[in-house]
Image 1 (cartoon, one colour):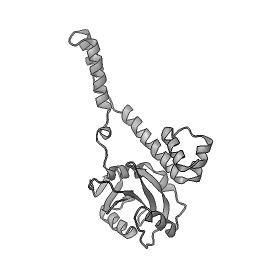
Image 2: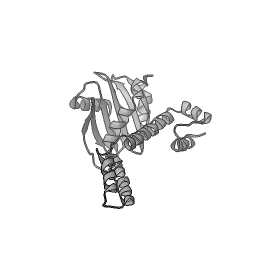
Image 3: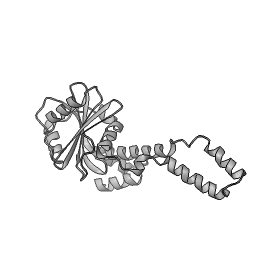
Image 4: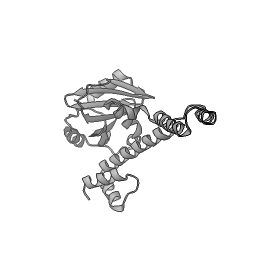
Amino acid sequence: MNELEARRLLLADPRHLSDELRDAIAREPALGEFRDELLALDARAHAALTEAPLPHGLADRLVLRARFGGSPPIRLAIAAAVAAAAIMLPWHFIESPSDELAMLDHVRESTWELGDNPGVAPSAARAALAQVGVRLADSTYRIRHLGHCVVAGREGRHFTIDGPTGIVSFVILPASKQPLAADSLRKDNLVAVYEQRGGVLLGAFSGSGMDGAALRQLMKGVIT
């Protein structure tokens, strides 16, 4: 089974894996990361469609309206279904998130990558990043993890380093045709800074207390 066949099978069903597909994932870490992306997307879609509460008193108002006149019950039922669907449809299904937000969510959801720490030789990292048009600077920071990722429908690279105050993540994607939506973001304790260089979108992420200015300076010292 080649990688393309494995990805097609994962797109069809990322939860139930054949022995052959498990072997392919064990051989190719990028397939495991692709499966994690699919499972995370599935979990977000499930949460979005099940967690949003209905307005308080909606059921009582529908019953009273049906019993004491007004619109026919069938019209009330249709209206209730439409209202429920509108309430449960989250904003991110109506408006696609920006690349910057998608990168931030990818880092927040890929927590296993923070614990993955086999160490990566600088020469191997340089070769991998060169494939996406990025040069790794000569620095003393140790690279913990390096892998492929799929964010906003595009394949890029994700790597982590031992930063000055803790683990720092980097995500590199082919840039879209849209202008940069934000050069920095924060969600909970995770700080993110972004920079577009030619056809590449760079993001650096820290949850260990670095501020945006320090993180941006670190990014410039790691990726040239």
